Length: 144
Image 1 (cartoon, rainbow, N blue to C red):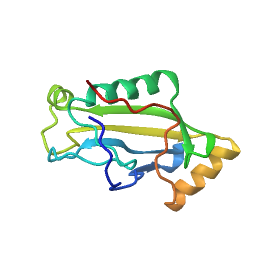
Image 2: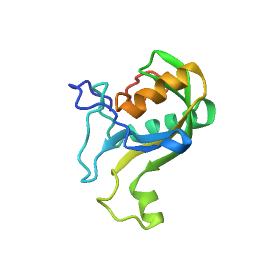
Image 3: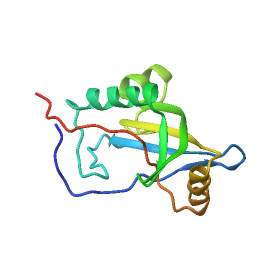
């Protein structure tokens, strides 16, 4: 169920590969490593009932868009190159023990484009000023 809450954090970039202009991080964490429910940067909570819809949205994003932007204002800045959706089932299949990765989350990596927008984004990434920002749209719907 989507629930309106006070925002808890921004989505930080946790990995940078300077030579390949790659950067990445956890684009979404619904439950942390300990399995505790998280509040996203928009103030929403995605619980177990809502998780399949969130996961499907990320799959659609990977298939249809893959675009990254600079603070939801400058588009044409980057393209997604990888995505890993962390669930108990996937971690078990890969032999990843509980408590190592978020219980439910989506890790993404992007390559900064060689455009003026991409260069502005890349400079902010290198300076530690950028946060993960995904190009997409959606709507909140209660799960019934």
